[in-house]
Length: 212
Image (cartoon, rainbow, N blue to C red; front, side):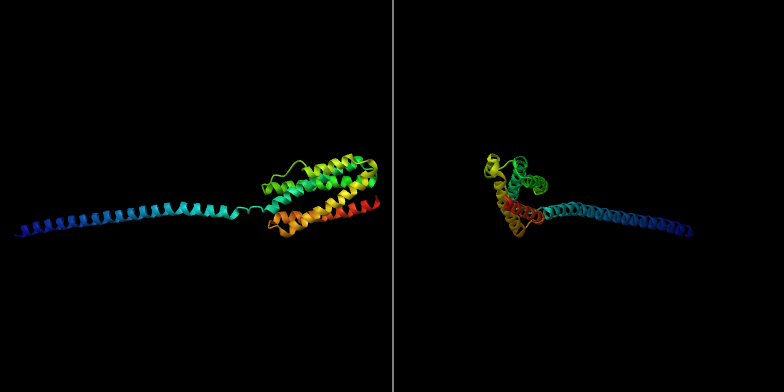
């Protein structure tokens, strides 16, 4: 009888141990599945949100850095300033060659030097603003240049001085108007920087004209 009881107890112990093992294994499987599900869900969420947010930020930065378009008046300023600069250099060279008085030749030399420097600054600004400048004189300035080239020697100095007075008054008005009206800070800075040089030229041209 005792042997039977011990045998029954041993069988019950084995059965209980086996059942506990099955329960523990099942708990491990469920825990592993839950962790795998959380990993997959997290991976999908990060994968979807990361690139989209980055792309949106890049697009926003590109829009923010896009420069505003130039106005029609700004573009006209580039055109007129370039024509004035080209003409002043060419007319200055004519004055150096054909001028009778030493003062006329000296003034012409100043025109070629100062306006050549200003033309280079205008070219750099135009490149920054994606503007193509003219490289040849328009009809108006070409006719003015040809008239100077054909002037009688006795009349050249006087007519050249008159030409320079009028031309620099027009150039000053152009820069003053642009500096006041333009919304572009770079163009405004260029116009303001050019004005003192033009005013110096105008004063010298007026002094030259009085001596003719």
